[in-house]
Length: 259
DNA sequence: ATGGTAGCGGTGCTA
Image 1 (cartoon, chains in turn cyan, green):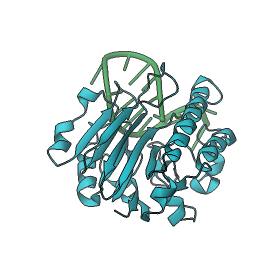
Image 2 (image 1 turned 135 degrees about the vertical axis):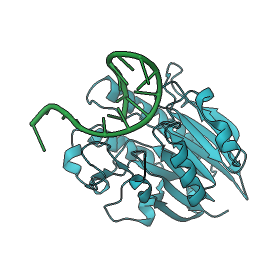
Image 3 (image 1 turned 60 degrees about the vertical axis):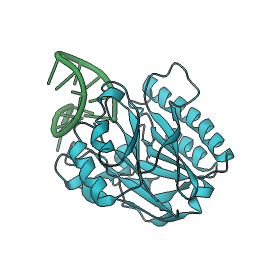
Image 4 (image 1 turned 180 degrees about the horizontal axis):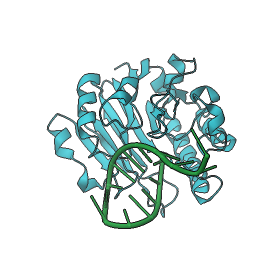
């Protein structure tokens, strides 16, 4: 079972690019971020007609997450618990059942810039809420994929030019400490496990010819519960997608699990 | 060198 995460930066603008990648990569489920659309603006039929089950949690213009799956999506939950006043659509989770059940959690973690400031406070508070939900998920002792656009550069090795990110909300020590606090609950960073060397990125800015200069960062992560990590057979980043027509600024990151 | 690009929505915000 192949599970991917892909920040598509606008579902309507990326419909063609997404369909092309789905056809060639053949994932079983995809966690999408930044659909930038309300639920009723998501082109559901385009995907349903091609055999995908679709669950969305969108809002107008910004943010928005969704899950595509070849298998039915059950027990769907929308919104990260812990703040009933949070209006930003950044979390959706659901279960798929193949040979065994797998809980899919799709997150779009706040960017947090500029830091310090209210946006950075929101980011750190959101990460606290995420840590609480992540602990609950681990306590189920089920196979869980906690994936998405984390907006966190975990280590200097995850940036082509780490010095350029020193003051950025994606790389500040407090951000990385909050990420480690979650990781060290017992999660496995799928890609880092199969590729410990530096130089592998999932995002290249649209500006300043970041792609042409390979000035990238690795911020899209798939964290696996122990029960999911035991089933991992591979992981990767589909870098070539960034070089195509009308690309997102992110590329798909995937993990393969037994059964 | 404080720019640059892209999506959304129809202006300026977000990233």
